[in-house]
Image (cartoon, rainbow over all chains, first blue to last red; front, side, top):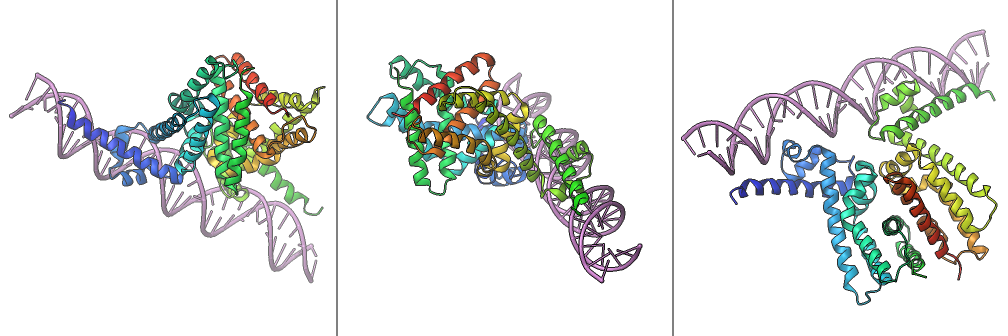
Length: 199
Length: 199
DNA sequence: TCATTTACCTACAGTCTGTCCGTAACTTAC
DNA sequence: GTAAGTTACGGACAGACTGTAGGTAAATGA
C-alpha cells in the first residue's frame, strides 16, 4: 500500500497516453499522427511517453489491446444475451455485434487496417488472441463437443470465421449501400455457419 | 513513332523504380525503406522518383499492382490447368496456387499486410479488384449460372472466399508446423466450398 | 533525514519526406 | 537545321518527426 501514490500517478499518465493515442490513431492512422500531438492531447511531455513505452509502436500496441478488449467484451455480452443457446444462433449474434462495433472508425482503422501492418500479422493476432479469437475458438470447441458442429480443426476454423467477419465488416462500411451490403454479408455468414453443421 | 525515345526512357526508369521498390518493400516493409534506398537500388535520383510518382505512397501503389498482377496470372493459370472443370475443383486449385504464392515474402508483406494500411482498405481492394477479386467473382457467377453454386450475392461471396484464403495464407506462413496448418486450412476451405453447393 | 529509486521534462542529433529550381534530353514548328 | 517548347531528371533545401541523453522533482526506504 505504501507504493500507492507513485503507482497511481504512473497508471494515470499511462492510461492517459493510451486514451489519447486511441483517439488520434483512430482518426488519422498510425503514420498520420506524431508523438507531439499525442502528448499534447494527453497533456504530458514526450519524455513521459518514452518513459512508459519503448517507442511509438509499443504505444500503439497498448492502444490496440485496449480497443480489442472493449470490442471483445461487447461481443461476448451480445452473443450470450439472447434466448437461443444454439451454436449458430450465438455466432450470428456475435457477428451482428461485431458489425455494429465496426461502425466505429477506431475499430476499422486501429484493429483492422493498421494493426497488422504496424505490428506485423503475428504480433497483431497474438494481441487479439486472448480476446475475440479465443472467444470464438471456445464456442467452436463447445459446438463440436455438443455435436452441433462438424469435427474440424477448431483453431483454423475460428480463424476462418473471424476472417469472414473481418472482411464482412470492411465490405459493409465501405459499401455505397451499407444496408444492403450488411444483409448480403449476413446471408453469406449464415450459409457458412450452416456448412459447419455436423453430418 | 517519333515519340519513341522519350517514352522508352520514361518507361524504363518508371519500371526500374517499381522493381526496386518491390524488392525493398518486400524485405523491409513500406515504412522500413527510405526513398534514398529505392533510388539507389534503381540507380536514379530522387528527382526521377518524384517526377514519375506523386509521392512514396503512389510508388507503393504501383508496386502493389505489379505484384497483384503476377499473382493473379499465376492463380488463373493453375486454376484452369487441371482436368476437372467443376467449380469446387477449380476453386481448390486456385487456393492451392494462392497458398503457394504466399510463400513469397513480397506477397505477404506488400499484398496482405502493408497494402490495406498504406493505401487504405478501399483503395487496396480497388487495385486488386480487376485481378484476383474479379477472377473469383467470375467463377462464382458461372457456378451459380451452371447450378453448381447456391444463388447467393456473388460479389460478397467472392469477398468472403478471398478473406478465408487470405487468412489461411497468413495462418499457414506464420504457423510452427506449416505442413499441418496447410492441411487444416485446406480442409476448412473445402468444407466452406461444399457449403455453397446449390440445394 | 538522507540516499535511492521512480517519474518526468527539455534540448538535441539524426533521418526522412516532399518541394523548388536548374539543367539536359528530346520533340515539334518553321 | 535551328529555335522554341516540352519532358525527364538532378541536387540542394526546408520542414517534420523520432528516439535519446542528461537533468530535475517527487516519492520511497532506511
